[in-house]
Length: 409
Image 1 (spheres, rainbow, N blue to C red):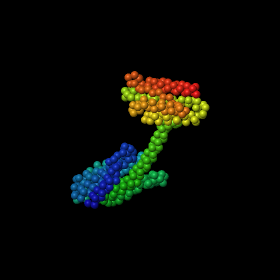
Image 2: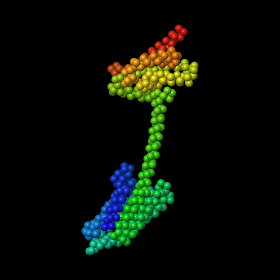
Image 3: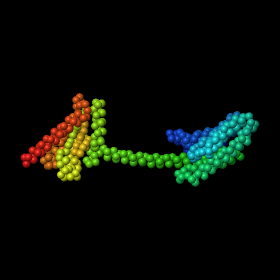
Image 4: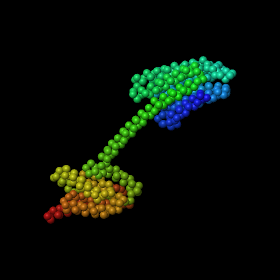
């Protein structure tokens, strides 16, 4: 019963430690080394089941089924070695003639086992069961085991040899692969002399645990770290993009929306107008009076301050509307929802504030406003032109009023 118990425990350990590899397959693991590692685990599971049944059938002397199970045992055993070899060859990046040699060596082993197992039905070269139900190993079985020992020794020595040339990250993995091969080799060699002991199952258990602990887990930790680095880089790129976006869509001098942001907003409004999704919209166009005189006579620093004061005046009245600087002294506000409903009151408040500034000889801003008329206007441009015309009418009126005041003085 201890034989069955060892197989059962080994099977449980493999399922517990490799459940994510077996049952939660990642898209990136469908090819290459990870695929062969998964196939290796599948054959190990099948080996444990076969070996467990072998011990049970041997114990109850069910010779017919025991014979069939022994045949499956040898085939699965060879398949496990083959997939382990394929995994190691791809993982270690072995190329050229040595890769071909190892690949064909594993394939030849598998073919030899299959052929020997078939021949064994007529000529017991692999094994036979005597009349008392006692298992006896054949010469072909010993040769195949020696074949495996030599093959595992070669690949293990190679894996341990390249440890000295590996990077710090790879060294532990390559060492684990080399040691897993050596452990399997030692237990298989001893299995030759003790055919009824579960040594092969123990070798698989120790080898797969080594691979899981020092190769698969190490790889996943590195993958997690690389993913964190990639996410951090993406975050930095997003922040850089956000900063660039902010710079592009924000006017550097005043802090309101830029001409680029205005152009995109106009494109959006035009599409919405074409689709009939806008019913209530007003546009306010602003122009700062006397900016050229200020720049020419007081300097551009004073002129910039003048523009900021004008922008502050606009934003203080049209608080809930996006304001865009579309030229040196030109601004546009898009009035929707609440500001649209209160547009006439806001226009009156703005003109009152301008009148107060005019009396204080502060910044003067002309404004013109126009509403979108869905059944009359073909698009945004017509609304803007009406507002622009009214702004210039207001601008001329303010200048005329200022000239008259100056003449009266």
